[in-house]
Structures are given as structure tokens and as C-alpha cells.
Length: 195
Image (cartoon, rainbow, N blue to C red; front, top):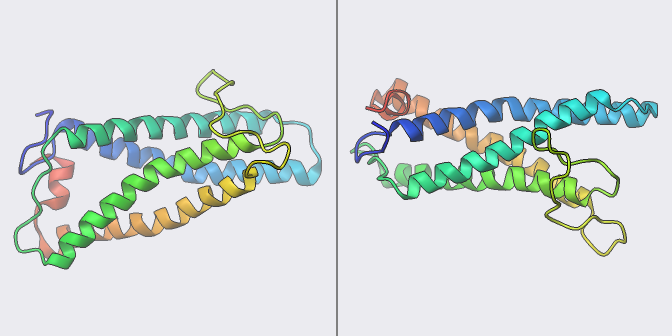
């Protein structure tokens, strides 16, 4: 079944959930690798940017895809029923589950947008990639005259997103495992199989 019901997640919701999760699992380490290569090039004053450009192309493209898929997922979610939470959950557990999901969605938008803003504000001529397109428009002005926030400002937001994101994701995973192992209800199973 493609659509959600009052008791189960549909195929579209499940596939988007796991696809975005897999892309994030690639994106975060790739970002660290990209940053390490950039710092090494700066430290050694090397002009061989080929590896950095390749890693950046994948990291940027993956970030844009996460943003697109998150937009699709949220649109799908608001146009479909949301399966009910298990009966018997305490009010604070329901509140924590909802709050965790709100933070996850907010981060799934803030993370790629802050990365895009960081690249946009960068004073150099480094391209912003989306697949083979290396001229993605800037969403904030380049910080060339000091009149705009420098790229470091957006980079700090981007870094804060993954730090906060790891905490929120850990809560989300811990909650799913708690439901599956301790409570033994169908919360995790219905995201895996739909029912």
C-alpha cells in the first residue's frame, strides 16, 4: 500500500524515511572527509584540487537531494494520515516523540540550507555543485565587502546542525529500539514492514 493509514506507514513514507537515513549516514562522514582534504590543501599550499572537487561534488549533490527528498517527505506526510501512537504511552512520551520528529524535520531542512548558505557566502570562486551542474545559484550574497555575514557564520550553523542532529537522532533511534526491545510493540516494525 502506497499511502499511510491510521495504523501503518505506507510504502512511500517508509522508503523516504530509510532513503534519507541512508543518505545522512553517507553525508556526515563525507563532510568530515571533505573538510579534512580542504584543510590539508590549505596547510600544504597544494593546488591539486581534483580530490576536493570530486568529494565536494558528491557532498553538495547529496545535500541537495536530502533537501528535495525531505520536502517531498514532509509534503507526503501532511497529505496522508499519520499512524496513531501505541495506546498506553504516557503524555510525556507522546510529547517527546512529537518534539523529536519536529526537531528532525527542522534539522533536515536547516542542515542542507546552512551548507548551501556557507558555500554561497564563501569569498572565493569555489563552485556549488548539483550533479554535473557547477553553477548552482547562491542563496545568500558572497561576503566580499564585509556587509554580509561571512561564510564562517553559516559554517557554524552547519556544524551546530550535525551536533544537535546526532543528539536528536540518538533519541529517535533509542526510542525506536525501546519500543522494539523493551515494550515489544509494533512501532519499529511498521516503519520496516508497514504493519
